[in-house]
Image (cartoon, rainbow, N blue to C red; front, top):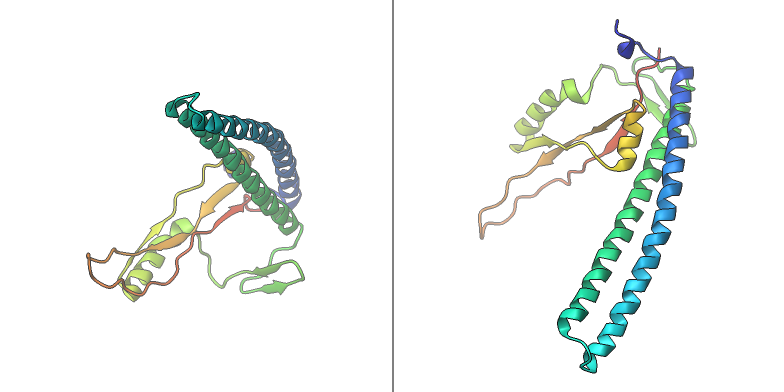
Length: 206
């Protein structure tokens, strides 16, 4: 069996999860510093825009110069918003890694087993299933039941997800329904609310 396919022990999984948490914390800290810089730039851009608004009203500058200042505010705001999303992504990834570290410390559930605590619910289904192997059957069932197709969502490529992926974690997305569009003027069919979920799973522990 190739070295890359050898199942990791629970201790190895716990250590890997701990390493991921450390890496993500460092990454989040760097984002916090970057956010402070972007927020300062945004505040400066807004001040300059307000100043140019006054100059425009007094006829000192052209509208084009004012629009340049407005564009600078938009770009600065986009950097702030993007960094905040990356911080939220890092927080989500840390929560996933922390949960996986706790799971690696638990003994495996028997087939069909169920366990619930104040912070965790575990269930081991009666049959083996994976997104890769079971998607076709799930799509067939969904299409036969609803008459609609289903699609598999794309994998996330955010920096926080890539950080965990480099550490050996498998980031996967679930299947979501894809509903047809109604012809112009026709009423829209009733549609269940599909949603895509993303989660991380470490290599199998022996």
